[in-house]
Length: 322
Ligand code: FES
Image (cartoon, rainbow, N blue to C red):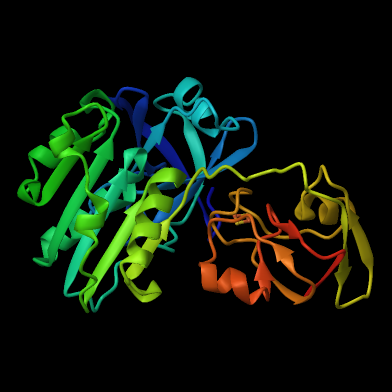
């Protein structure tokens, strides 16, 4: 059974796509059409062990008979990718959310630059499919450690847009490495940049783009699987709930959402890693210590909202709009 926001799907196919990368093809249990999605969409997948993880859809958005997700085995992960690789089998039923899109294509783009790092190719590939279908001007750069670790190489090579894609391998010749400074040198009006990949890759791309004068409206990015930086300086602090005046202590080894949940205050969450924005909460007083990868630098600097699944406080107290 599916509720409005939860879909029951069956793993119709599990395939090794590249070294340490598998794809899952998900179909509706009743064999019917799945809700439509747009390029850049993701679904939340409930995995064995009570883990929920978000995966971008990487098939052609025209398709309604399946969702395709690609998952990298990440030894540093907290179990989501391991569960997909080791436990999820063909034929298994899974609960997923309907597709959501926080990483959509800008409709007014004159040209698009798509940058993928590693498994970050999943939403980027979907965007490339879409842009190719609409005849839009774009180019895609796909950086991976080596050809063996490059998912969808065959699919890209056989696609109608193969000539718009450049591969860059860490273990390849210097001449084929991505020269970010050159690529991002001209932030022309109407040019939009989309980037998805590991945090280091995205930080490098976004830092270079901002240095070259790209404005935030031209930059589109989605972090995933981000490490939430814990530091020795994490201290305890107080949360005050504006509605009731109640005070909740957040000890240094707990997140705000954990401390609030123990006090009976539930905040809706999904990624628990500061990536998805689901737990976004307004801050009325105090200064948050932002640790998320979701808000833009400007939004973080405004200090009027934060992601309590990972962010903390720089002041002894935060007053939240709860
Ligand atoms: S739950 Fe995803 S950002 Fe907090």
